[in-house]
Picture 1 (cartoon, rainbow, N blue to C red):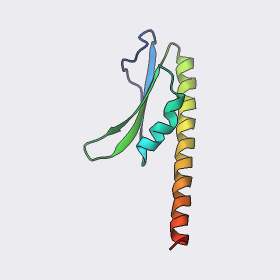
Picture 2 (picture 1 turned 30 degrees about the horizontal axis):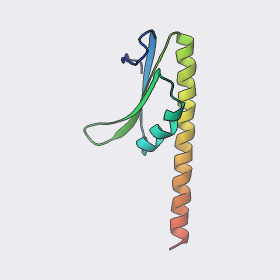
Picture 3 (picture 1 turned 45 degrees about the vertical axis):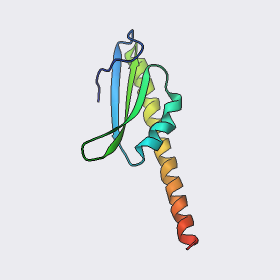
Length: 99
């Protein structure tokens, strides 16, 4: 779960990367990206089989700051995923009632 990636602020000394394989990776990445600071990079990656995942790397100067930021990110991603799933359920319900 941890890794090192070069981001704009090279003074940061702690980093972590979370890779989350999910449906609708682009929508989820776009949902959490507005909260990013310059030390946070969120992107979508695709593996050789076409599976998409949201990948977020965070760098912070302190371990506590890194932990807090990662905790906030995980909560934000979970909420975004719940909203996307609720939207899909609602869209599917509309499709079946209009048939």
